[in-house]
Length: 78
Image (cartoon, rainbow, N blue to C red; front, side):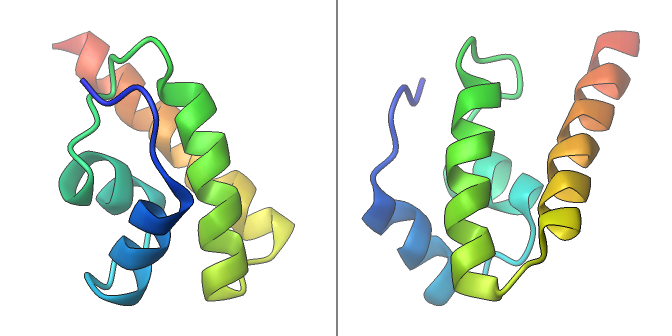
């Protein structure tokens, strides 16, 4: 389980692996489990870095984080 991600890891995934949304970055590129106890904190931290790297507005960042919570609800339904 990933407990901490470096700023470099996130920036590399965005710049070189072409992660364009938060769920792709966290769950596919970095292998974070959506059930990890620190997933919300990491989503906030990574989202802020992605916002800087990709020029997201505050609204776009909020939508990306809200989308993660929707994904969590879908996972819990199964």
